[in-house]
Image 1: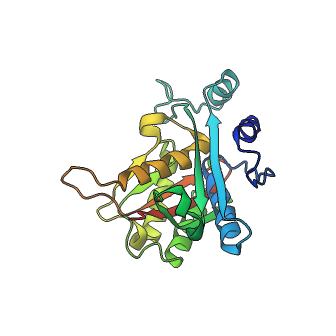
Image 2: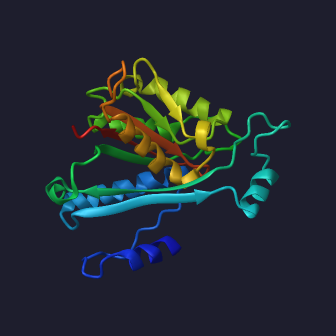
Length: 242
């Protein structure tokens, strides 16, 4: 809520802003729930712009102690552990009729989906990846597979559980997946940024849409997904606005 107070203080008082935020406690999947709510509000015509974002930190003393007690931290005794990270990111969404005064948009949100898994991380029952399978299927049904995305941006930690989850959901939604399969893991460079990961990964996708002097052409469509430890799962498809 400190961030909201800072935003409120920095904003022009004349702007007709709604400061009654929808707060989602959803870890790596929370932003997808916020994006879905924003898309619904924009489609209804009730709002013309919406700000959605996430921030998280696993680097403070209390969080590090909790992760260590749960044996989640990467180390000699736990080669399958995670690297604690932190981050923050926000996305400004606008109806297509409201972007004229904002400059050219960086990208377009094609579709967003969420689901909840009843066999989340560390569940003793066999992994079924029902939620990730569901969100990928929802994106397919929303038309995100045509044209096929060229890259997948993952918000996961690199722990083996999440790799197995993705492999299972991938096989059930192969026509949505990049071919050849290309994936970028946020944890490979920033560790586990938690609720900030989706905003970071969407920003990475938008950055990849920008044409540059290189042999490979820029991306035009990408997938971003994230699964929280509690089972909430989300994904979205974004594409270049050019």
